[in-house]
Amino acid sequence: MAARSVRRATAAIATGAFALTAAACTNPGADTAGTGGPKDSAVVGIAYEPDSLSPLLGYGKDGNSKIFDGLLAFDADMKLQPALARELPHISDGGRTYTYNLRTGVTFSDGAPFTAKDVVFTYRTILDPKTNNPSRTELDALKSVEAVDDDTVVFHLKYPYAAFAERTVHAIAPEHVAGKQDVNTGAFTTQPIGTGPYILTGWSKGEKISLKANPKYWNGAPAVKKFTMAIIKDDDVRATRLRAGDLDGAILPPNLAAGFGSDKGKRTYAAKTYDYRTVTLPTHNPVAGDTAVRRALDIAVDRQTMVDKILEGAGKPAYGPVPTDSPWFTQGTERRHDLAGAQKILDEAGWKPGSDGVRVKNGVRASFPLWYVSGDKLRQDHALAYASDARKAGIEIKTQAGTWEVIEPRMKNDAVLAGGGSPGDPDFDQYLLLTSSLAGDGFNNMAWYDNKAVDRALEDGRRTNDHAKRKAAYDTVQRELVKNPGYTFLTHIDHLYVVNDAWDSDAKGAPLSTQIEPHDHGLAAGPWWNVEAWKPKKSGDTEK
Image (cartoon, rainbow, N blue to C red; front, side):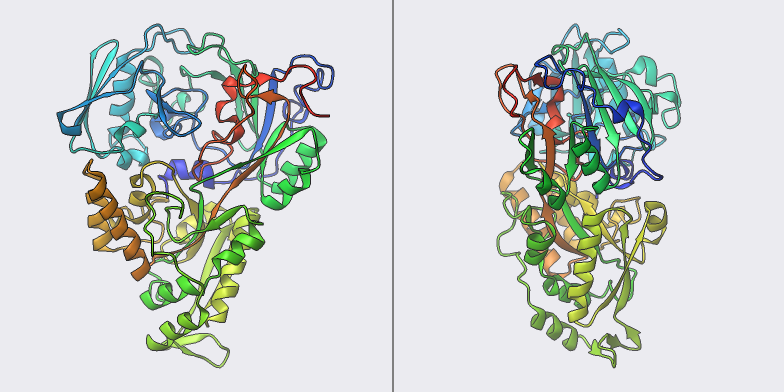
């Protein structure tokens, strides 16, 4: 899982009913819709919101934060491009030193100049143990950071960390504002100031995040002048509001996205992702922590049926955090659906069927609870299907819904239908998900997985730039997950977005696009990953 505050950005569903205000309820382009006039506003429906908008606490660590910029940014193909840096970093000292030359003339939205001191402040504050940023582990390789002058910053690493440049898409905070406040509780956490293409105008928690274009943005003022993210946890409500014209776009599950297929005024975008659904099998649970039970569940589950029935084909089976079409996936670690094989594993391990069909070993029934987040139909459907498959093998799984406030204290002993996934380097997700020392650290290693061979391989994988050695390390991790799963990975999910066909992605008329997405979705992903570059379609271009 990603670190705690960031996981909350994608997992902690806003509580309470969605109170649709006039700003979010009224289509901001309604006064010009169909008239051929310009459309300079957009409202999109998303399901989750962050705990904080401060980069110092984890917001914007993966880029696309809208309010902030990183030194680098990912383009449509997930290739690194310069952002606050003028060019890609110069790497020296055997991969231990990264030097960035910064853009000049860039200012924060309050007019103050951006300099190397802001970069140093951001990274040093994140590394400070007093800062409540659980993403600190992601910067474990960073030894020190220094400003050579206003336009040059140098990072010194403890060891050659192959993924470090990708870590520098991290949003940069202004020292002159955030440095004068309590980093954990100050106003900056909800009223941030950045160098990004948009300026925050309001955040009504559980309701909406409102942004306006930064007229002095270094890369050009956005054509979409007002951008609002309406936080609507209920999938059906998002679809209804989109159909009613209250929203210009929304993320939707496959069954609801399909309902817009005949609407010529809207387009559906499918984003390939690293986003997986998995069941945590807590080491401390006497049933779920049993290796035989874990191995049996791993092959009792019918992943392809989940893809076909729950995702309606918009995804693929998952056998670990790495998707099967990734070059980092270890061929041969796919697990076929084998109910007879699962029953045999349990029989040989001493789990014998009881009078009610539920297996028993040494007086312990093969039964445990499985929690999923209330209101998340995809998780609910995955949980119910998993429980059904498990029951056929003689394992009783009792599904229960709750908020994260209810679920989190139970994670050490109870199973959870969880989500995660981060594209790019294999270190990003696997280290946080599987490292034993991170067990119990918020939403990191939720299963309290403890495998010394995996721990060693994860360290080997992040401490070298040698591709062959890294591939061998992550092959070891994936093969160990076959021997002792710790989690039952179910599916990798494509993200589906339905958006009004009113914009092009640039002035040349290119269509909107999506990136390869992480588990985080809707907030900084989707077709609006580059909303700052959108241009209104010319009169007559939009299909009627």
